[in-house]
Image (cartoon, rainbow, N blue to C red; front, top):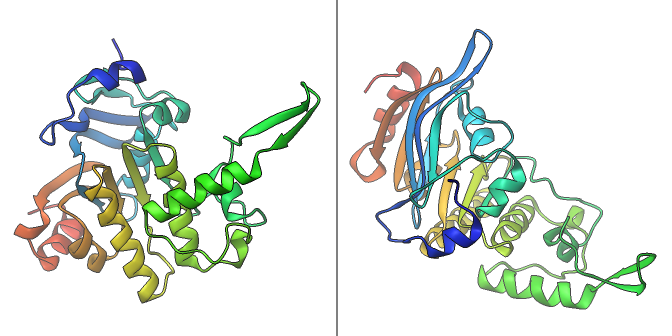
Length: 263
C-alpha cells in the first residue's frame, strides 16, 4: 500500500529514519541504461549532495524522484511506507518540491503571484463566470513566507524580471517552502550567480535543513559541495560510485571519484 498524505501524518518522523529511501532503482530506455541498481537514502534535516559528471545520471534521478517518469525497476519508500511517484502531482502530495535550474518562474508576474502559480486564491464575483484574485491575502501570505526564510525583496508587487539572479533563486525556493515541502531538490542553484548571491543561496539551503527539510543538492561547484552538504553521493555512468560524509573527505578525493568512478 502506498503512503497517502493522511498516512504520512501518522508515520514516525525520527531524524534517523530516511524521508525517502530508494532501493535498486534502475531506469532504462530500450538498450540504454541511464541508472542501474541505485540505493540512496535522503534524511530530514540534512543536505545530500548529488554529484557526477555530465551524463552520470543526475538529471534522470531528479526526474524519477519528482515524478516526471517512473523507474524501470526498484522501489521507493517515504517515511517507511512504500510509494510510487508516478507524476509531479504525486510528488507534490508527498511534499517533494523541485527547484529546477531554469526556476520555472513567470518573469512578467509579481513576486507574490509567482509564489502562488497554479494555486492562486480567488473568489467569485459571479459564480463560475467572473473570478478575482485575493491579492491582498496572497501578498500577506507571501510576506510571511519570505520573512520566515529571511528573504528581503523590495516589494511583493515588483515583477520577477526586475530582480537579481539570487533574488529569483530565493523566490523559487520560497515557493517550494510555501507549499509545505518535506523535501526540496535544488538543481545547480548557484549557477550564474555572483559570489554574494551564491553565499545567500547557500545560507538559505542550510536554513532549510535546520528547519527539518530534506535537501537534495545537485551541483558541479566543489566550493558549494564542501560548504553546504552533510553527505555526498557520486554517480558515474548511471551507477552510484561512492557515498561519503563531507566532513570525512576532501575536494580532491571527490573530484577523483567523479572523474574515475573509483574511491
